[in-house]
Image (tube, rainbow, N blue to C red; front, side):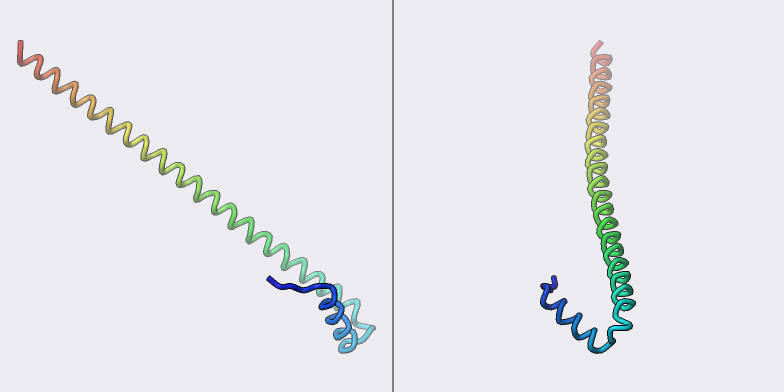
Length: 95
C-alpha cells in the first residue's frame, strides 16, 4: 500500500523535531505510537470479522448443499413409495 522506508521516517522525524521542538517531541511520539497501535488493532479486528463472515458463508453454502441433497433423497423415497403403491394396486386388481 504505502512504500515508506527508513529515510522517509527519518525525514518526518527531523521535520517534526524542527516544528515541535525537543521538549514536546517525546510526548508526541508516545501519542503517535498509541494511535498507531489502536489503528493496527482496529484493522486486525476488521480482518478477523471479515474472515469469520466468509467462513460462515462457506458453512451456509455447505448446509444448503446438504439440504438440497436431503430433499432429493426425500423425493426419491416418495417416488419409490408411490411406485410401490401403484404396483400393489395393479397386482390387487389382477387377482
